[in-house]
Amino acid sequence: MTLALFTLLLAPSADAFCGTYVGSSGDLYNSASRVALSRFGDLTTLTMANDVQGDTSDFAIVVPVPEIPGPDDINVIDPEVFERLDGYSEPRLVSYECEDFFNDYDYDSAGGGEEDTGGAGDVDVEARYIVGEYEVVILSATESGALVEWLQASGYAVADASAELLQEYIDGGSYFFAAKVGPDAEIESGDTLSPLQFSYEAETWALPVRLGTLNSQGEQDLVVYTANAYEDGEAGIANYTEAVIEDGCLWEPEADEPFTEFYANRLSSAHSAPGANWVVEYSWGQMHCDPCTGVTPDASDMVALGVSQENVEDGDLWFTRLHLRYAPDDVNAPLALYHSDITSSRQQRYIQHEGWLQEFFEVCDQGWLEPEDACEDSEYYDDGDSNELDWNSEDDAKGCGGCAATGATPAAGLLLM
Image 1 (cartoon, rainbow, N blue to C red):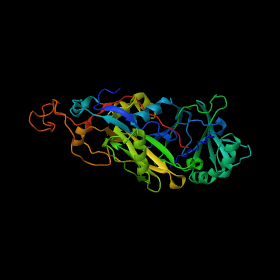
Image 2: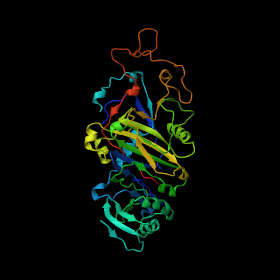
Image 3: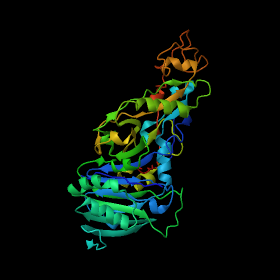
Image 4: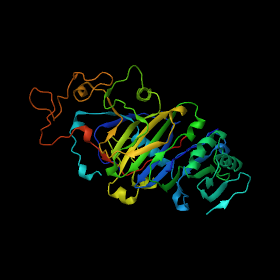
């Protein structure tokens, strides 16, 4: 049985890259919840992807909202948008050749109340919608016990234990966005549901996750994709701890260790500190990547997530991928997101080990080591005895750390369980 009970506090194709994509963190987080948040001014567009594991009658979403969404504020999008977002931003393993360090990439080209009388009492149905495969109601309530009773009586699978948390939102003046799979949708266990999306105005940017912990079997992973104006830069979480994972180092597998296992171990180590914490797995402007993995999200994908066509066309977009891990007792408040104004790109990237690369990168878990060989036959080396790269060549060579490729394809997200 899957009970998706997720709360929200409302208060161009790639045209150049250097290096070669080799592998990624893979399907490590199939059980993770994924959410996309577009935030421009006070307007937030929330998109969440869901799956069904069990009878669809056991599936429901309940989200506190600060205002009553209208019919134009609620949508469903193509599930593949989330898959493109995930593949584009996931941690990656890359390989480099000497020539990759001298890329002549042209950066300029990158680019109304109906009262319910069904016995629950103190619950008003403010609006009803059919959106894709979902039946959606917008509710107001004065007492959480009545709200839970109404939801359960109306086929929305919510736990009795949610009443205490729901009361906090009632006291704060929230309405409630509730969705379930309609009986005529012919959705079966394991099917991929259309990501459900709605927009709202709010002065604060927050994502509470406490209701979602009620179903937890232990630690939970949450991947949050954010999109905002370029000048607002990388997104972060103010009230939980940022963890740091060493990256940008040379990786050589021990025995038959796959890259997926290597990264999973590093992620677990980063999350070993008590309490909830988060890492930045990707942060870059206007859907750039180095190198690109999978299919880069395009303009239509970003528009589907709530980014305006004007922002996309003007290149006024910054994308961040945050990865959180927490146990139920670790989260005692909503995630308070913020714009950092930092526009320095970063990513979880590892480089396939080659001896000559030790001149330019540390070896993971070992630090700086002497180069084991060099690229003597590269045209970029001096004619003399030195094995150092000629950074003063007339070609104005650029290091791979600055290479990028512009993508014109969008992203995707998943639900908090």
